[in-house]
Image 1 (tube, rainbow, N blue to C red):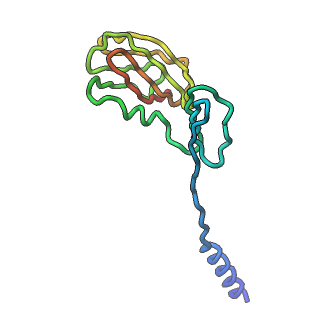
Image 2: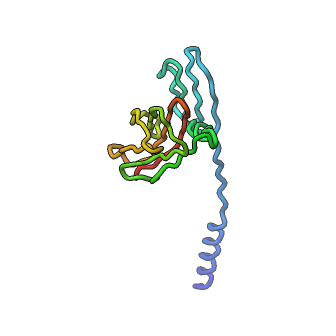
Image 3: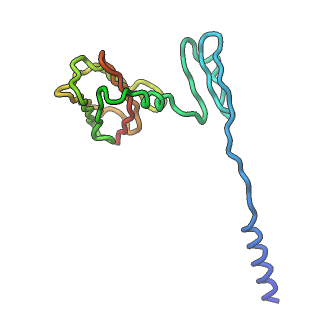
Length: 159
C-alpha cells in the first residue's frame, strides 16, 4: 500500500511538472500627428496623453526605442572623434577631441526621461573638455556637445 501511494505521488508530481504553459509577449500600438503638431506614438497598455502637450513636441511611450540611439548613430565618423573618460564617472568627466575645437562648446545633459539637467557653454583646453558633474544623481544620462564645427551625442553613466 505504501508503494502504491508513493507511486501515485510520483506520477502526480511528474505530470504536474510536465505541464507546459504558453505565454505570448507582444506589443501593438500606433502613431499619429494631431492638428496642433504633436506627434504621439504609444503602445497598447499605455495611457493616452492626447491633450496634455501643445506645440512641436515629440512624445514616445511604451516599449519603444529611444530617439537617442538614432542621434548617437548619426555622429559624423572621423571628422572629430571624441574619447569620453572615465565612463562611468564619479564627479568629473572628460571629453577628448582628436582635433582642437577653438569655438565654445554648448553642453546639454539630459536624464533618461529627456529632462534637461545640465546646460553650459565651455571651452576645451588642449582639446579636452572637462565637466564637474558632482551635483548629478547616480544614473544614466545623454550628452549633446555642439559647436560651430561639430555636433556630438553620447551616453554617460554616473556612479
